[in-house]
Structure formats: structure tokens, C-alpha cells
Amino acid sequence: MPPSNANSFLAELAYDLEALRAMKREVGTSSEARQTVDAESRKDGGSNAKDALRSATASWLLGRTDRALTQLENAGDAPQAQLVRGLSRMESGDPIGAASSLSTLIGTSIEGQSFFVELATAAALGGDADHAMKAARKLPEGADAAYAEGIALEAAGEYEDAKQRYEDAIAADPQHVRALFHLALRLDAEGEDARALELYRRAAAVPPGHVNALLNMALLYEDAARYAEAEGCYRRILASDPTHVRARIGMKDVLASQNMYYDEDHERREDRRAQVLRTPISEFELSVRSRNCLSRMDITTLGDLVRKSEAELLAYKNFGETSLQEIKDILAQKGLRLGMLRGESDEAPLREGPSRAQAEAQLDALFGGADEEPDEDDPNDMSIDALELSIRARRCMDNLEIRTIGDLLRHSENELLASKNFGQTSLNEIRRKLESLGFQLRRK
Image (cartoon, rainbow, N blue to C red):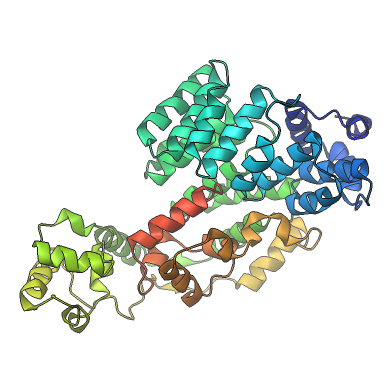
């Protein structure tokens, strides 16, 4: 798209959701269009509502969602402003706020097929399955309707039905990016890495490339120690947005990891042990008394259990020697014992590679510094408080000195589970909160 087209669109304020999405794709693939829109984004918009809306739209087109929301403060509540506000809130990790803004547009000229897809997505990711399904049912039969019903079903916890509707959407439109991505995300969460990776690839192949699909592909590649492929994913993101916080964090990790050498035998042993430690307590035949005591102590996996000492268990009300022996017998079957993980490191030995500072310097040489745009434009720089975690999970974040979502995403599930007093319940809570933002933890 030539720059003149970008200027014309911004000047006319012809706010149509499909046109906005098309323009965003063009901005992502055309350096000329990006330069033109960037100049508009850097204006503060002033107190004139029309100018503020034009600048905010430019910021949204470039992915600068926090800046867009600030500029929209002077844009009023006209339908066009509410549309850009809803889109910006969605991309900044606030689906509830996005659904609220978009809902004000029902009955306006902005209504249409793309609008109800957007509303269904925002409502579902915000946890309002009923609202999402109502929006989905406004759509005519086809790929969009199947996708929207799928994400509404997923929000309701109907995962198998949700996956089927995503499959229906992809069958109707093999390039339906949202259906590809959300099916991949669901399969990824269920451990079906190969199929998830295939779907992420397909989503990322549709121009300009689904950023979260690329990020999640990179994580799967890193889990498989396929660092060159992971680096390729991060490079694609950073080529269009050198300041993308999560991509920069991932790229630094990859650059460092490519120069670290692990004791492979030790790593395989640790992987096997980690699988055993994730085994749910519910898989074992325990007495009612023992099961109830463990439940009250929030012990749900063998990993939780072996982080406790005999003294800690016996100190719990109604937990006696009989229950203790029962627990020890079960652990012995798996080659485990009480207290075995207290103060023990799970890390495999390695030879030092370059420091993170060196990796940062290498990254800056490739893509420039990260100070061109403020970090707050990326959800990864949001405070961990935005997840509204339970007290137990929040305390674990404090112990690990995790302050932002970006910090959290650098940890694996195993690393969190190895933290004192952090069990499967807390892990599931964090998974759900991150998935609402389109993110996920590393599993290894």
C-alpha cells in the first residue's frame, strides 16, 4: 500500500473493521506504509477528537496499543473511537475491557460479520462464554461462525466440542488464522506438540504472520533444543518490530542457549524424573484420611509430596504414622522419598556460554536497541499484578522475583513446580490467566 493510501485512509476516518484489519496487514508488510503511519502515530493528537482518533488509529496499526489508548482519551466516545479502543484493549491484554468497548457498538453502522467475530473473541477470552456464544450466533454459517462458536465453547470448558468447531472452521477456510491459532493453542496445552507446531506454522504463514503463533512456535522449538528454528521465529517478529519485548527476551535466551552444552544423560534423567513428579496423587489408592489430609495441604502431585518432610506431614492435624507409612510405600514404588527435593537443584550441569549482557549486545547489533518505543506497548511488560493471582501463587512469584509477565514467561512449568509451596493448582491458575492473553509457559 503506497503511503498516499495510508494518508487518505487516516484523513477520511472511514472506520470499517475489515478495512482496518486489511490496512494493518499492509502496514505489517510495507515499509513505506509503516513510515507514513509511524509519523502520524508520533503525534499526540491534541484536544481535537478527530486528530486524536487519527493518531490513535495509527498507533494501533503499528501495535503501539498503550500509546493508542492514551491518545484515545481525547477522542471521545464516538463509534469509531470505541472501535479502536476495543481493538487496542484486546491487543494490550484486556479482553474484558475490549468486550465492554465493542458491546457499545451493537446496533451501530460498525456492526457486521467481522465485528461479531471480534466481539465473540473478546468476550470468550474475558471469560464470558454466554456473551461470546450470543455474538457467535449472529454470524452466518461458515468459517467465522464455526471459529466463534469454538472459542465460546472453549471459554465454557467444552474443550472437545471447541476443537471440533475449530476444525470445522479450518475445513471451510484453510487460512482462517484465528481458528488455526486457537486450535494450536489448545493442542499445545494438551501436550500435542507436533500437531500444534503444524498449526502454528500455518497461522504464521498467512501474511503478515501471526505474532503469537510465531512466539509459541519458538517456545516449542526451544523445548526441542531446535534453537536455529526458534531463532528464525524471533527474527521474523523483530524484523518488523525490533522493540517487541517478548521476542527480544526469547532471542537473547536462544543466542545464549546455542552456546551452552548440557550433560545429555543427566538431562534425560531429569526429564524422566520431572514426568514422575507431575503424576497426580489421585492416581494412587490412598485411604480417605490420607487423601483428605493431602488435599487440605494443597498436595496434588508427587512433586508436591516429595517437597515435604516427614515432620511437616506429621505436624498436620489427623495425619499419623499409619498415613505416613502409606505415603512412603507409594513413593518407594516410584523410587522417591519424602524431602528429596528440599534445597535440591534440578538444573543439568553446563559449561558457561556468553552472559545475558553479551547476548543483549549481540541482539542490539542485529536489530538495534530497544529504546525506540516504550516497553509498556507490549503485554509482556505488564506487572504480574495484572493476572490477579491467588495469595499462594502470588507469594511464589515474589519468591522467584517475578515482577512482570515477561519475567514469568522466561520460566518453565518445571521451574515453577520446583518452587517451594507451588503446586499443580497454582500452575493451572497461571496457565489459565496466561492463555487469556494468548501466552503460555515453557513446559521444560
